[in-house]
Amino acid sequence: MKVTELDLPGVLFIEPRLFGDARGYFLETYQERRYSEYGIPTRFVQDNLSFSGKGILRGLHYQLTQPQGKLVMVLQGEVFDVVADIRRGSPTFGRAVGIVLSASGHHQLYVPPGYAHGFAVLSDSAHFHYKCTDYYNPGDEYGILWNDPDLGLTWPVPAPILSDRDAAFPRLKDMPPKHLPMFGGGA
Image 1 (cartoon, rainbow, N blue to C red):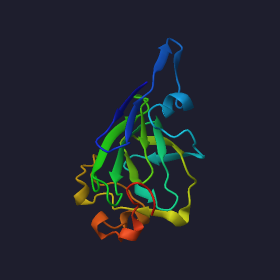
Image 2: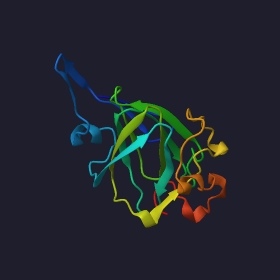
Image 3: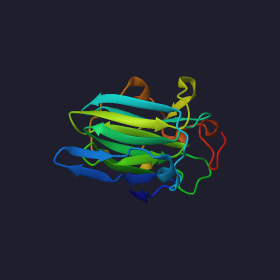
Image 4: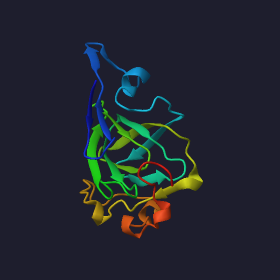
């Protein structure tokens, strides 16, 4: 397994070891001892699977009082996955990274608690899997506008399909500070 920290602290790009032959392949998508060596939590409490069609964009989402770390992977298709540092007081506040994840690549991304996360589907459809370190609480979900120019992202989907809620999220600079996580934990 190869793990690379991206340009945001704690955001890890994971290349699991793939064992393949004429019959197909095998890989571990999580192994507590090995993943914990890289600082990935050993306790996940919820697994989620979403299905989306081409051009669908979900995000940028986060929970404030129940922040979720997420270990994400594409099981079918291809997505452009985005992580934004929205933690007040962070040295990388307002920076974002985007990376392509695909089923054929078998890669994973670890998104620590306190970051905003989202993705856009590049293929005809995608099955997107994520393990979460805390439970989903719909009353605690917030979001940042997906195309906030201050994040400096170039999305490869020019006219994405968004939910009304995701399209109405504010820019990071317009988010009340009390609705942003604190660097180092806390709300």
